[in-house]
Length: 208
Image 1: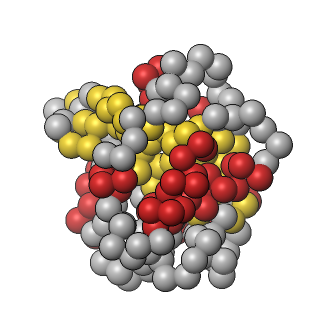
Image 2: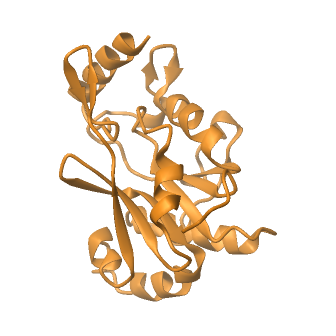
C-alpha cells in the first residue's frame, strides 16, 4: 500500500484525435469552464503536480507543462503513459507511481487517487472500475515498469492497454455509480460525442 498522501504526480492524457467532436475535446465549454478545466480542478487537490500529454504543437492549456509522446503517430494511450513515466524518472522526486486520467472525463472521483493508492503496491498497477467496466486510463503506474513498456511498444501490434496490464501485477479498484437527481452518473463518463456533451451538461447543472 502507498501510504503518503498527495505526493504523486499526474499526467492528463490528451493525445487523441477527437474526430467525432470536430475539435479538441479538452477545449469544449462545459458550465463556464472547458472540459479540461473540470478535470484539472477535480484532480489538482489529489496530486502534487499535473502535466499534459499532448502533441508538441498544442497550446499551453491551463499552464500545464506538455509531455508529448516520444514517437510520432498518436499510437494510443500507452504511448502517453510511457512518456509520462520517462518524464517522472527524469524528475528529482521519490514518487513511486504516476497517476493518469483522460482529458475528457469531467466528473472523475474526488477520492480517485486515495482509493487507488490504498490498493497499490510498489510494483503494482492500480486501475479504476465502475458498474462492471474497467477504465484503464484511470490508473496508477509504477515508474519501474517504464523499460518494459518501452520494449512492449516497439511492436506496433502492442497497443491494447489490457494486454499490457496482463503482463504485470494489477489490482482493480471499484468506484460507485452516483445518483444525481434520480439519474445515474458514472463518474468515469467520458465525452466522445455531442450526445455525451449534452448529458454532461445536464449532470453539471444538477450538481450545482
